[in-house]
Length: 472
Image (tube, rainbow, N blue to C red):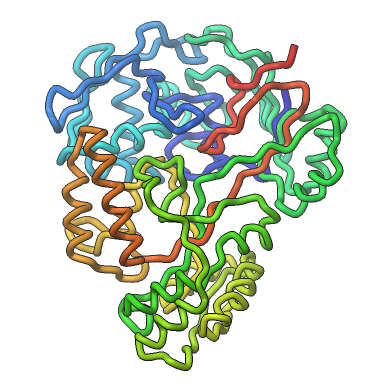
């Protein structure tokens, strides 16, 4: 089984990088206490169960039959070591996932207890990509040595990864769960879409991830019996953000005019060739906290002009939109759409490398965010709440609404999922009234999938060999 990604994993050592392809590759070799199912619902993995004796404590009961690829048995010592490493390693990219963790304690050989600083319903989501390693092997090999020959509990074990070549994995005969259908998994990295699709056509690959929209459109017009295109809405939302510390977007009527001026369906059809979904709110539909009662915003240029006039701009206004070079097409489409509502847009186009620095000083910008935790509370606590009390770490525009802050803080400690869902949906509704940002569209993830396999893309974009089945 050969799988083709657009890039190489940055490392095979866990905890050091927070990047989608890296996680996707590592997850075939390594496992965490819990995992997402294909719809991003939490399910047990190395932890067979867990319970909350109170609002602050999480007790994880480990599977007793699990062994690592080197033959050593999984124990609580390995789990405490791995979680502590992700929390405290100098180079860990996962430290933020442990901000609310107060302690990590071994109870016995097969039980671990985590204590949080406050009730923290997102803990399980945070643990999904915190992979467990055997303490003796990691301490002996170090970060570099472990990346050259990783040892995990996953369905596949490491075989080889030559410089510039593919990663080869083999099915682990001692795997604790159902063995994978394919005895060998080869993971290739190819930026060239023609080469990647050629591997599908020739039968040499079974999955190609991240197919370009333009390439997919051509393949859709000229289908090949060797494979099919499969797409699904992803987790990435494109939106318009602004600086609340200056005019004109510190005025609600201007923000509402901006939202009314955008033809979201037109953006998807024109730029993504139909691969995408207009966004009605700040997260995709599959994310916990999505509010199905919110309407799809319809374009209303006349209403937008009226709102601008009421805000003090009867002749429209001039504003500069900062866009990354790779999204120049989106910027130009928005430039045309907004002109009809009285927004005269100048584009400030910056390179990918300079974009984040440019956004920090921009008054108006096109941005994207991925809901990788599968939960809207991440967005609300980190990006919508004001920068107070440990919240708002990624609140780029300086948005501040005391009422919404209080709603977010109240939801942050709710462990009852039904209650929390109602709270998050209420926050979403209030946000769409006040518009801390203007959502545009949800990007779709596109895959080429061989006719020889049965496989459904996951919402989190992982490609896991254990989920690929041959067609009989």
